[in-house]
Amino acid sequence: MPQKHANRPCTHHSVRYHGGRRRQCSVCKKTWRIRAHRRGRKRKRSSSSLALRVLTRRSPSLRTLAADRGKSREAVRRDFHRSLAALTRGAAWRSIPEEVPLIAIADALRLRLWSQPFTLYLVLLRPVSSTCAVILPPYLREGEEGADWVLAMARIPEEARNRIIALVSDGHMALQGIATREGWKFQCCHFHLKMRLGNYFSRSRWSRGKVFAWLIHSTVDVLLETTSLSSFRRAFVHLFALLPLVRSRRGLVYLQGFVKGLSDYRTYLRYPELQLPTTSNVAESLNRTIREVLGKTRGFSSPTACYTWLSEHLRQKGTMICRPKLPPN
Image 1 (tube, rainbow, N blue to C red):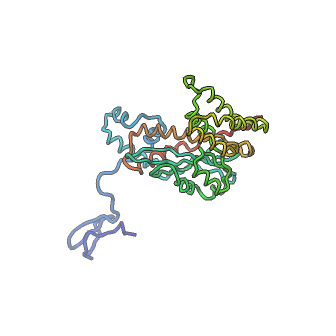
Image 2: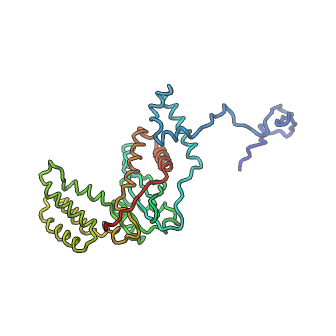
Image 3: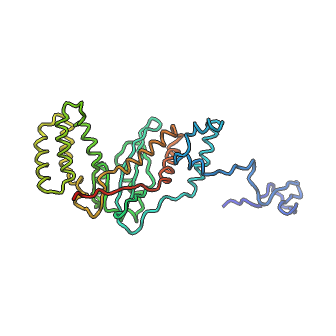
């Protein structure tokens, strides 16, 4: 370790006391302080209050803040960066509940930064017997959503990862592979299913095929929610009868994929004791707050700055409410 105190500015050996805290060389008459201080003007003491107000949306954007204070944007930006550094210094994320089985809710947010695609991977952990999901530190990677889910899941603490028994997501193939490899129950998101079905089978009153679309959607709803075996069989046969009438090629492929993976959409019915949610909308709600932060910042200087902003925003939120889907009586 380099020596900080009692350093001598000269190489002579004849030294005498020059007061209580200074020394003087008797040859060249140089003096120095035995406990050196930092040179230059003293730094202003930074506070985390500014960053906290901006991240919790209790303060306007930095551009508006600069106009209100009569300061330049660069000065306000420097003040905010110092405040953000003070806020993140030694900050801890919300602790994961111990010794209880966990449910993981995963989703990704696609970003466009510096004309390049980036993906922010988000994971929340919720105890089976609770509705409070803990937000984990995000994972930001350049590129589209894909195999990087393996790296994102590997960042979960091993002790908590060993207690995960189910995974809820939008049905991405990488997440399905992880759930199969880890032996987790896998629940596909109903909201994403219905939203994608609406792209191919519109129920809008201006749609020419709205009657057929209503038949498709009502049949899918029965397959997703019914607990009656006879109703399930009738809906299954009805859906197969509707498949030859589908004119959209991509819509037909999507319906065939839904039939093939139907069991993943009914995991919450097969394991009611797990109290699984049927959607990953808690992560979607989190993505909406992230988009609001991105709109307020108007860009970042580097990927590190982007990750710092978003990480601190998620750390301040800490938890989200994630309610289970109760099976119908």
